[in-house]
Image (cartoon, rainbow, N blue to C red; front, top):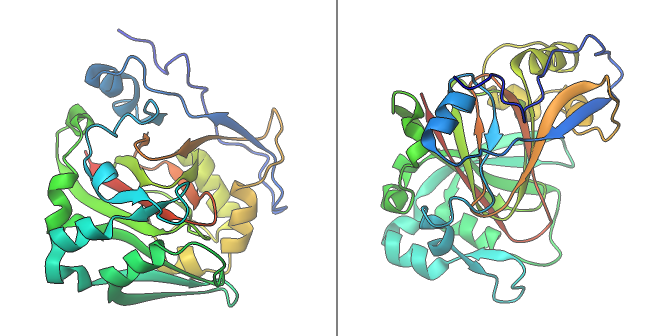
Length: 294
């Protein structure tokens, strides 16, 4: 029987050093990488004990056609990615103008809105490179793949979903322009397999007790798993951002993990683990997909 926790995973314990000073020292460790790369190892070392892990770099590139079919090097700036509009027009036809619920953050006003906008408009926005208004961000967040079923075949279910009962609760898309895309600290009600499709994101994770302590001290308490209105527009958001993204580190600081993901990279986030996400860079497309399962 394999030891638990895995030797490459530092045990996390809730910290009693939390205070209302938003500059809380952290102790951030790299997220452990699944090795050997097998379903039994994933199940026994991470899924069953509910511990997070990353997958080897670009692991999902060869198994998720969406990564190569949805995005291409930007015609004007090849170092960035842009939506492959030819693919989307061919695959979706008139459905490319389907209205989808999107999150709009008015950064200068500190406001958060939800609107329905055409998918084609989002693709256009993601293709933009150059100076732009950084005060407004439009983001397709937590969009069920059932709302764009024509894209389902390019996102086949990864084998790791079979680590549990094999039940999938939802498959969600997250797409937008790299400028100022961020998801505040929250936790999910189900195990989460998260894969980056385009662009890059930086993710920090905190075990349930530690994350709950942060929320109790700085986030106005813990109410539900995902709180769109309070999470995106609440008065505590700015303080939470300072806490979870603080660069000050100390050996006895609040423990957490960090991972950077690019196209084809993935990670496993267990149920109840708190995590915070932000895009990397100021131009190009950013897109992710996640499977909630058990």
